Image 1 (tube, rainbow, N blue to C red):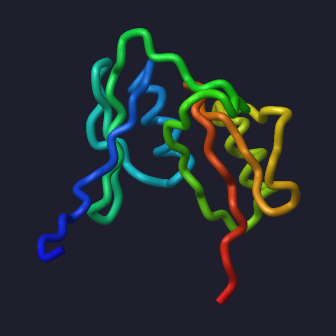
Image 2: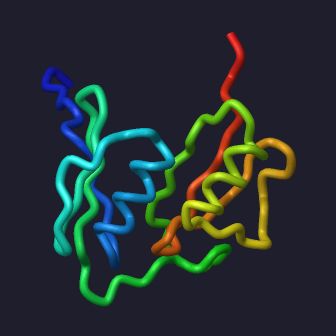
Length: 123
């Protein structure tokens, strides 16, 4: 292949773009760069994540091995336990099913989409 694309940004479907963007802005320490009911965006250092309203959006069931997987974000943190407490206070929830054991923790964002807290690798 001779042509390569550059990733411009990631857009995520959402039932509530404003809340979704505000949550991840807080979790990642990024800025909310756009916020309307239909679409919101966060960014830092030239990287952006957009959140677009999808009428009738339903989050995936967790866990549901029979359903199509949509997406999930893996986030590095220095201390998984501390991050979990802060992100729960920010609006995340912790599902009972935790497939990572001690290696990572699954949380659900405010619209029900799973994301993982992973220990930051040491050099």
